[in-house]
Image 1: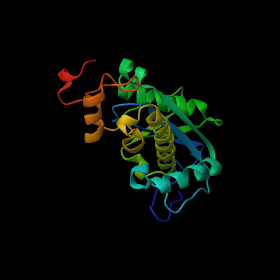
Image 2: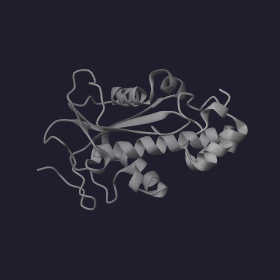
Image 3: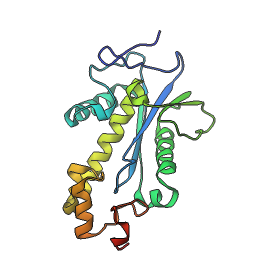
Image 4: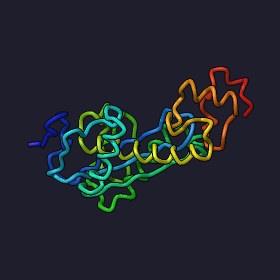
Length: 207
């Protein structure tokens, strides 16, 4: 019997047996900064009252969950792929690369991998399953989404101190109106993804 999270009805595992890692990424749609992925292997008795897809949680809830996940999982890891790599190999390949890197860093090797979304490449010889909206269905993917999001947000807050004009502490590099206005006014930084459509009138931007 697969265990369930009482509040959100998230399943603990896709398979009934074996060490299963969930993986997810954050920052795919951003104009600046890295894409960040996490991988998590949860214990059989793991539970938390409000664990869910990170996008459904408040910042305070994510920040409360992060240390709980880290302290109560069998293994977890976070990996970054920077904007230069994103520009070189594209965002999809970079997202998959970040997920591979996070799985590689796990202290315990999983026997099965569940992935948020519908795109993935095999990691070594470990079988995997892609799951659309998996972060709202399985606890390990939800936990990975929380770690990826909080670590990326923390990183963007540090970059904000270097480039405060873009308000990355607030928008995290996403294409908000304010972020695009700042690009229009101040130009781009080394952290912007030059392969992305940074402004609707791209030709007016001096790259």
